[in-house]
Length: 173
View 1 (cartoon, helix red, strand yellow):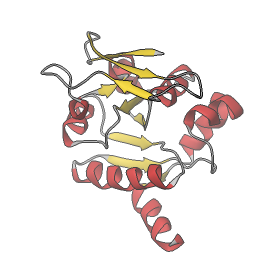
View 2: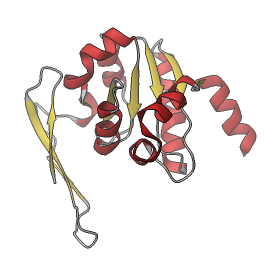
View 3: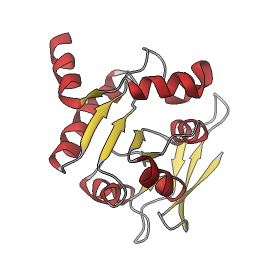
């Protein structure tokens, strides 16, 4: 499956490829970085969501293309980082549209580690940051398919400020 990656103006600058059969290798195959495409400077879906981000006053940050697709189709303003941890350049892009970010990452160890790093970086950049929790084993894509847009919206409304989230993560260890 080939997924076009566009800059915020809508121009396609790269592609993300994902295997659809369990035995296909590699599972992911993406365009290489070029002078016009850099993962660290690109937010997937910003071209589709920027109006809604301004209108609603926040953005949901997710980890992947399919998470973005489900969240966006469910009616929420969303973007995804392109296979990298969130960068300062990506945060500066978001700053043009909002100052509030709700992180909705996978509840596994990798997702929670990325959430902690993203929280700190976004807070350092002056954003109001909340974290929306999901049940173990579900990412935004599967959660929305199971609980619907209304259930996901409730998770976003129940999102907690990042300092509370960090304290809970430390206490759990």
